[in-house]
Image (cartoon, rainbow, N blue to C red; front, side, top):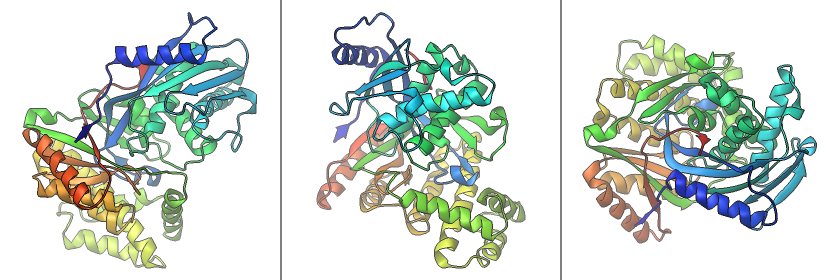
Length: 429
C-alpha cells in the first residue's frame, strides 16, 4: 500500500520557501509570503455543478502551497516543484484566453480574472501587481481531487492579500475569489469545469461537507450550507483511492458531456437540467426515489429527447441531484452509515449513463465493496482519477490492502490511498 500523507502547514511552508530561494537565489526574500489551499473530494453530486445542480464536496488535508512576492511592475515569474522544467515568465497585460499554456495558465489566469473583476466593479486591473511565485504541493496530481483548484485558490488568496483587496475576509468575498478561479480554469486554462472545486477549496469548513447549490444568480450566502460530516463519531472513514490512472479535463470528453447536457436542456425548453430535476422531484414528493411516480415524471421528459445518449446523460444528472438530497438528509439525521447504497447507485449511474468511469475505477469500487466497504463510487470528473469508499474506520487498512491486491491481479499499477478528513479552506500560512 502507498499512503499519500498530507503535510503540516509549517512543513509545507518551509518546503515552498526553500523552493522559492532556489528559484530566485540572488534576490531578497523578505517580502515572500506563503498561502495554501486544499484539494477536495466530492462525496456525491458528480457532473451536476455545470447543470445548476447540487454537490457535496469536502476539503482534504492535502494542500498546495505557494510562496509569493509582489513586484512593482506587471511581470509574473513562476516556478513549480512539480514542474521543474516548466518555469514561466510573462506580463499581466499579455494574459488572455489562448495566450498561456500549461500549468502557468492556472496561475496567471487567476491574476487576469481578478483584474477583470476589478474593472467590472469600478476598479482597475492595475490593482493586481506582478509577482514572483513558486509552488509545491502534496495534493495528488491528476487524481481527480482538484489539484488545479488548489493551485488557483492558493494563488487567489495570495493575490488578494498582497493587492489589499480584502476578499478572503468574508464568505461573500471568497465566493468572488472562487468565481475568479473558475474563470481562470475555463477561459485561460481551457477546461470547461463547473464551480464545485474552487468553491470547496475556498469555502469548506473543518468537520463539514459543503452543500453547494450551483443555480446561477443565487446570493453566495444562500448557495452554500455547511453539513456536519463527522464520520469518526460513527466509527467510519472515507477512504480515497487514487487509481493513478491520470485524467485530463481538457481532452474533450468533459466538454462533450457538458455540451450534451446543455443541448438537452435547450431541447426541453429549460435553462438548465436543474429545472428538470426540481420538477421531477416535486412530482414524486413523499414517495421513494424508486417509486413509479419518480420514474414516470423523469420518463416523460426523457421521451422528448432525440437519442439514447441524451436520455442517459440527463437521467444521470436528474437522479444524481436526487441522490445528493437524499444523502444530505441522512447526514442531517446522523445516519452516515446508511449512505452506502446512494454511493453505489451514483457509481452505477456515472459508469452506465454518463460513461465517465474507467477500468481502474471500477476495479477499485468493486474490490472495496467486496472487502467490506458500506458503499463506493468514483469521484471527480472521471476517465481516471480517484474513487471513494465509506468504510468502518477499523477496516480502512484492510480495504486498502484488498484494493491493492485487486489492482495487482488485474495487471494495473499500484494505487495510492488517503483519508478524507474535512479540513480548513484556503488561507495564509
